[in-house]
Length: 266
Image 1 (tube, helix red, strand yellow):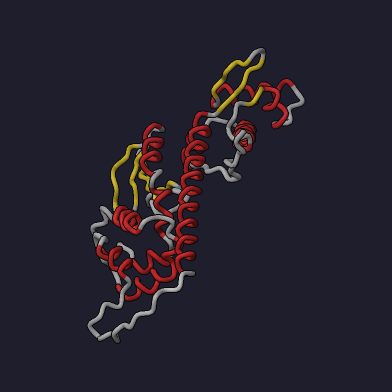
Image 2 (spheres, rainbow, N blue to C red; image 1 turned 120 degrees about the horizontal axis):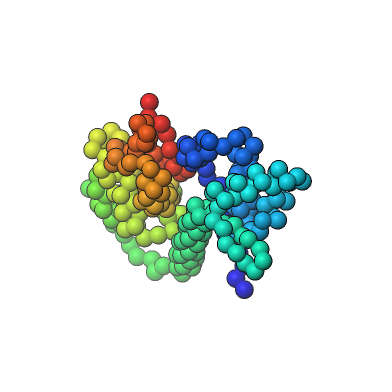
């Protein structure tokens, strides 16, 4: 049996969507809903029974049980297993599946990066055959061939190449991927940014380890689909923001924000 490693202790809440979907509820019902969401999340979104819902909501009266059932029937999918009814939350299941897949992809990338570092360390233990090398002249290239390859693969080269090379020498061992993939991530992140002042210097991008944000950006298409299904209209992209509208209001999501929180445009 495979050990379960996909328990996540934080649940992302789209506050604007949550408010819109629960505006008709009483404060008591909202509290019940949040308790049930939290309980389902701690159970890895697996189906739970009616008696579990009553227990977690500390129901001791028929009136409380009625309030809980009203929330369950409105927001949860109901199934029957034997003599028991079970409940799941469709959006939580989808979010948990996405995070689980993301966790495993990052884990695999980390293993590959660790293997590459071990192989590199092993190769360093082999004493090289000494050979005379000429003294460098001012015209000699001061940059590593690997960095040159990465730099040349950038679609837009912003900032000091020398500073970028200095940062590269400090962080390259943490990439956990091919240099070609690092360049692809950078190019994808700046694609569509027409005003060059909003493009980060490559040295800054490296020092902030923004290649790790690529996994977050991979969820942008899924996030757009989810918001569209909730009635938002996707209006396109402006710089590093995805733009939406709903009910006469404009919203935006910063693709560099790891939480991808939806913001109201002022």
